[in-house]
Image (tube, rainbow, N blue to C red; front, side, top):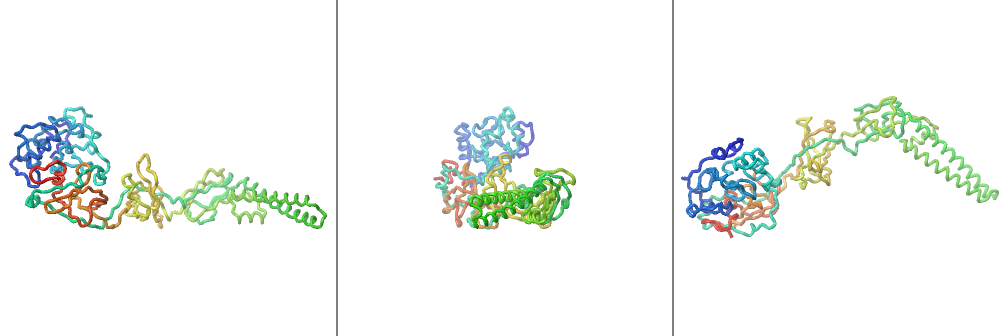
Length: 526
């Protein structure tokens, strides 16, 4: 086989192709294939080789490869270097499956076809870069004389490529000469119908805390850690004291607050007394206005002192307690903002701290996030609400279910992936932040979709096509816009309707007919 031969480095062309099955010149041509004369004419039009009039009518077909013996590069390896390079596609002219479409069937017979890049595996320099040097040696070129870059390879799978806008395939017909020809061609058919299809995407996943239930607790003032009441791993509820910080700044703020309280009370009494004197005519309006100004200033200072205590972390109840007890203690309690678990602790008794450093990290681990990296080619399929199942490397056999809650609006410029977030229940605490794993996103769950058998779909060089049976001898090619794959079927997004009959077995033969301007002998393309 060519695949095994081409894998061996440093071989000359004779050795490479000697592994091919020899042509069987005694084999009879199959009735479902155009005549050898048609094949040879097509090879001439594409490859540009000149043949004499005797060669043009050679009717011997090689049974092993389905080609005319005189032009079979597998049986006559000397044709490969003699034909030179195909300047358009960067491969040997004699082996160019694009210029000579009939070669594809031969490659498939030899099991030498790379489905991922839609080319012979022996000439797929993307999957097998080492073969570039082998082909270059055969053709008498430098190592860099053959390059995968010169071949038009789309990273998009062939089944997902959109139909060419200017393709004229639709509207033509392939008409067989008679019903006898159609019967001898061995066609098989299938009726287009809807089937329940499921599809999942697999991508990498990283576990993270729910950022909406995650907090770093730090003191609002500078000071010294007086005591630590909670340790890492402890469960807490909102308001639990985690640590106490001794802060002179807090003591000063409390004292200023108490002073503002007393000043406000004093000017309230003074304002009431002056107002009473004004009503009795003893004091004038000027004294009354001055008293009101002083009371307003006192109120502003009181509000300022109260707000300062709130900034330092005291709530309204604590501030009322300071006022009632005349508390000027420098001790500030750090409390938990919500129910959860202490996942980090850096507080140490006697250490000087300030607001720039977190002493505790609290997280509610009952719900975790899974950050998913979806490949760029799949981003159109993912939507918020899609079910997700995540399995992580450290918990083999365990899986966690959730739903997509957010899909990013931008692609990562380095990884070319899309960040997607899912929420996962974590009641038992098995999931931990920074775990890695895999996620399966269900983008279609038993949806009724119009599908076509994969065997009915052919690539004609620019479009995916299927052949609809118009009558017993007439077939209409349809350009297809395809979707997801499921087993032996693929979704048809456009081009076919439920109830239409398409050719499965024999569709490749019909494809070769529409790729030629005329068909020799058995059928006619219009």
